Length: 249
Image (cartoon, rainbow, N blue to C red; front, side, top):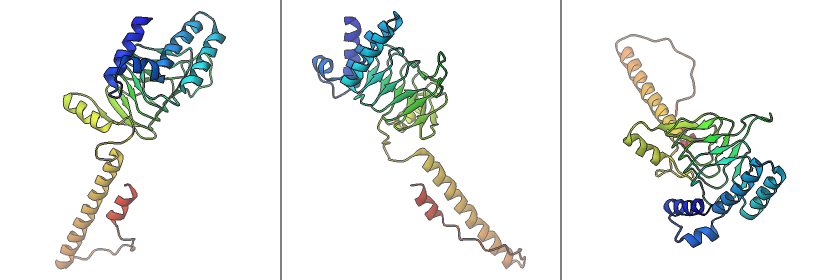
């Protein structure tokens, strides 16, 4: 037990620049307290002491603000940072070296007892603040879930999921892509340039449409100059790309 505790403390110090000493982590990190108490509750649950497991989980929730069902499986060196408002359901599985920020829900979408209702996070997954991962699917090894994302389907290993409903921004295939994904993911939903990838794509499409309209106007003018007339179409509102760009900012 003490070797696992030392391992947990070392991993928190490694991942959190605010952590200064082992004593500070041991006494002041509710995420660590929740993990330790979950081990007690999970042991009771596995040995058939269901009520005691639930009671320990209930006490841990009151002390830490983190609710982990005693039936959930939590791996080694899992770091729940800040942690307030984290909810982890009964059939959830959290792999080794995962990082979970405050307000995260690993929830279920089925009411059927005895089924896999909650997600599985494979090794090294990072789930940003406020994200909701809902359903009995797998988030692949090394994947990242952005702040406030709502994930309802499987995330491939090494991918980044952002938005509501979540979409895949980038899947790591080499070092360059891995660095790009790291720039896109932010635990608190703030990217370096403050831009959303979906908005960037929409702006690109709007700019392309504006360019095509300008080219069509030039073609029509050239045809008129050559004495070729075109059928007049019903007048539509003038296309304003700047107005559309403002809508997706």
